Length: 319
Picture (cartoon, rainbow, N blue to C red):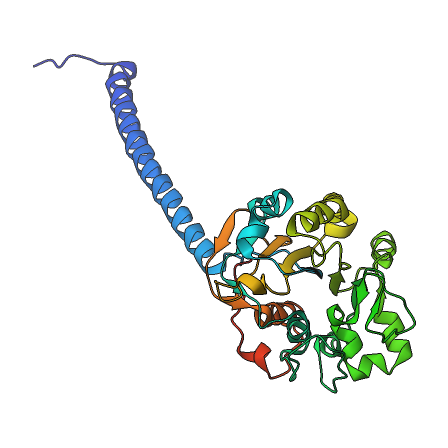
């Protein structure tokens, strides 16, 4: 039998075709494998990164409060204050405490309570000299500054009951012995309201500031409507001034409500605006003037006096 003769080319053609088919098959298998590995890698990467985010997600950093400025107005029920246009706008754009209470009647015990964490036996508006510690002591011990800006302040550590529309009963720090009898300290921290503009311009706004309007502007001898108009004119422009508002928490409250018609347990208007205040928040948590003092203490890590400030409710409505 004679076998047909094939040259080398005839043999290689089918062999090459088979090799190509095997190559293509291997290529498909490899690509399929690589795709699966790629998706697995992506899945593992997402899972690992997700876990890393869970484990190492940074805590939200709250903006600092470097200054707390408190304005004290006089003798109005919370509902009446809320109805005033400028005070209503502060509620809309700030954090309002609708269950905030004064401590007593008449005025002076409330001013003392806000700074000394006690009324110190004060029950009326007559001049008193008190050998007690107060918020100013804590602020200075922490290496920070405080001031009371008092409208109509006669200066020179004036200890009289009244001068024009200035009254001592609304200036608690002049009743504290360690301020009143130390002229250097007194002159440094108890100042006329005009100094506020100087401090804003110079960048020397203190950590804690108490602003006390005179008898006209605080509504005592006028009305809550008059006080609202004054507040708008005096502080409206300042609330738009970064030199004043940068990291500043601005607070407006009243010493007491209308004691002639106190039907709501001395509830008073209290709003916080600016640093860490959330617009539109309206809280019904029970607070009082001692809570305000504690807010200052906690914000600046001052400790406390171990009195009503230590047990006061914590104002945690700020973000």
